[in-house]
Structures are given as structure tokens and as C-alpha cells.
Length: 214
Image (cartoon, rainbow, N blue to C red; front, top):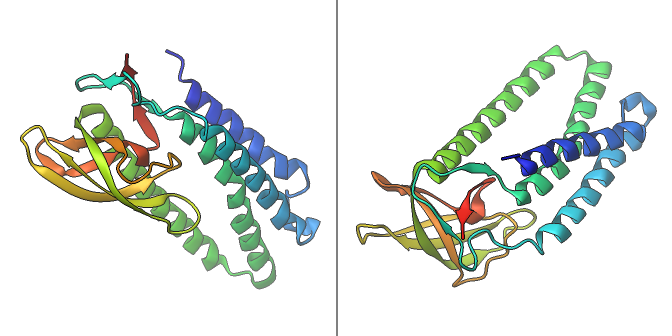
């Protein structure tokens, strides 16, 4: 099976990062504010497109679709494939800013601090997504219900949900709705560790998605 969402994400990433570079945002010496506005404008346009497209995408768990028993095939979701590349041009801005500081102040320690911070953030993201991937692939699945949602500004919205395990235990947790716009009372699949049901993830918060069957 061709991983079209993953391949699409790579292609969009190349396009979105390449555009500000082609527009002149290659180097801070090209002058402020273009090194700032070129990546920002491309990222805003890409995010607008992603929002419009994902708004009409069907939910993978709606209608008569269901998840099979573990282990399940897991891949990058189309929502993530469209939304994640839109954020990449923004990372050109702190790189340019760091270059300017080094050019004027020759502060080599900034490079070390920035590299350490970037490594820490990347490690955190990878650990979180690795946990998500394994829960989707190997975890038990139950249909949860969204109890409330809170708008915290730009980006994903905070949700509270509950679900009942196969043993009849009700678990309440908080998570995120990453672009699905689920309302209070909506049903959403929750994948959990059978040995520790509190270790769980709602499908609407995931970068990945488990394959469904008709």
C-alpha cells in the first residue's frame, strides 16, 4: 500500500519551505522585513489551504467503518499531511534571527543553546508520537464521548472526554482536538493500554491514524 499521506507531506514540505527561499527569504542580508514576511506569508497561505481542505474531509471512524483487532496498520493521517508542512516555513524565522545575533555579537553560545533547545523539543515530540503510534497499533479501542471543549486560542482545542474499558471501568481524561471540530457529546475512538487504561489517546488528537475497515 502506497503511503500517500506521508508522500504528500514530504512534497508539500519541499514546496512550502522552497517558496520563501525562492522569494528571497534565503538570507537575512536580503534585508528586513522580507526574511520575516516571506516565510510568514507562505505559512499563513498554506495553513489557510489546509484548513479549507481538512474541513471537508470525512472522519475515518464515521458511518459503518470500524477498527480491527491489534496489531493494526497505522499511517500518517491526511489532516496531518496537510497541516504539518504548513508550519515548517515559520522555522526559517528563528534561524534568520539567530544568524543576525551571531553576526552582530559573535555569541557562539547561542548556537549551542539553540541546538540544545531544538534537540529537547524534537525528543519530546518524537517520544509523544511514538507513544501515540504504539497505542493506535497495539492498544485496545473504545468509543469515548467528549464532555467539554475549551478554545485556548490558535491551534488545537482542549477537550475533556470519557470512555469505558472492556472491563467496565470508566476513565476520564483530557486531550486535544486537532482540526476535527468535534462538538460536545460527539463520539470519538480512544485507544488505551489494557494494562493501564489511563494511558490513552483520543483519535482526534493524533498525527497518525489506524486503518479502518468497512
